[in-house]
Amino acid sequence: MKQQGWTGLGFLAVLVAAAMGALATHFFLLSADQSSPPTIQWGMLTVFLLPLGFATQLWWNLNSLREIKGITESERRRVKATVGAKRRQIQYAICFYVCSASLIAIGLFLSPGNWAVYKVVTTFTGVSFSVSICSFFLILSEIKEVSDFKSGVHERAIKTKSINKKLERLAPKQPK
Image (cartoon, rainbow, N blue to C red):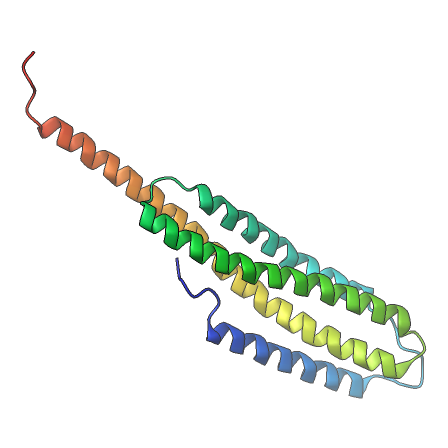
């Protein structure tokens, strides 16, 4: 497993996604008819459910790595440190999804008939949506890494068992 967790490149991708989301909503708002009251976009809140579900799945997968069998004590210490860092990142992501959805919901309650509030809420929604999609792909990458790690440990255990069986057959039999 990678020690560093999400890299600086991942952080840069999130920043670029946020900027793209802000630009997209800015152009959307420029093209909106501001002579009529704004429409409420409650469906945008459901967008946070998908990454939240995958973040929760990754949280459980990381927790299951604590009890993994077939690794040495030094490997267990390294895995424990790496898992701790990755769990902290997932906690931040889960908090982001919940807080973003909550703030958007509050903003949507306040926005009917008020274009100033609607613009702020829509811009925040665009930024949050873009960051959520970007972090979703980072989470998928982490899930794949955890799966690959578990698979590697399992394959190593099978090879070790096979080698031990071969060594037992080669060892001379002790007379009784």
